[in-house]
Image (cartoon, rainbow, N blue to C red; front, side):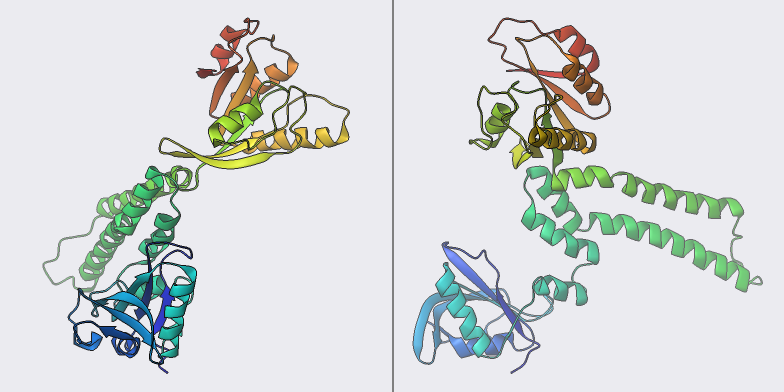
Amino acid sequence: MNYDTVAAISTAQGEGGIGVIRISGDNALQIADKIFNSISGKKVTEMKGYTASFGKIFENGEDIDEAVALVFKAPHSYTGEDVVELSCHGGLYITKRVLRAVLNAGAAPAQAGEFTKRAFLNGKIDLTEAEAVIDIISAKSRGAARAALCVKEGALRKKIDGVKNDLLSQAAHLSAWADYPEEDIAEVTVDSVIETCDSAIKCLQSLLDSYDCGQTVKKGIDTVIAGRPNVGKSTIMNLLSGYEKSIVTDIPGTTRDIVEDTVTVGDVVLNLSDTAGLRDTDDAVEKIGVDRARKRLEQCGLLLAVFDNSRELDEDDYNLIESAKSVPSIAVINKTDLDNKLDIKYISKNIKYIVYI
């Protein structure tokens, strides 16, 4: 067996229209020939790159499934090696049965991420592009997908390469000017060296400064729903989640621990946390929940500060408004169908964005 050639199921582990088993390595085509018979009678090893053939997967004389074999010849493949992709009917049993036939024919099981690793080692992609593959797969919003695809296409690499090339060019010029004074080489000035270094620093600093924004787009915004008891935090959590995530009652203090969920609002992913109502309490269990809520509030990336339109501001509300000044915040005025007793003017002076429900 040639363990240079690896194989794995490349589609999700579940029921679907098709399942794809990818084989990559020096013997990929020969291994595919051992378990695939095309209807035309043409062997996989005789196929040209970027061509497909319909046939059947078999093992020990038994047909396993119908399939399409798609061939990619080195170096023009994802991994840079010979690759065969067998597309059979989707489903846990069939795809695993086909993979078992491929492994028995001489391939080794691919490790997690091995196809991308081989693409990196064979110079098909660089490290930033390899890391972007998992970001594309795990993207939860349009913004995250676009950002990951941009990196996958080399946007970050091109900026870093530009800095590297400028520095190398300046270093080469400096070496040539110092080592060959008799040659007609333009003098390297202090100003030109400083200018090149400053330009490199600015470019790299710009990349570093955009990191937090990129992480927000990729992983989502840690969003805390906070307010005093019984203002409607859990109702808002359920509205955003689209189902009964939090228990809703008219009893203050129902939510005692942090309830979490992830939702996509437009192109933005929100990592929601429905917290215990902010108030002083003698209940030991509720007090733990309130302390956790206040700690989570200090660390969040977005605060949804919820207020009850039918009740006047109290000390807990004023404390929440003060906390809202230190983080990006949206005030949510709930219960607007009831008579207004809330000082909305005071809230609007301290929190720029207000939503009424």
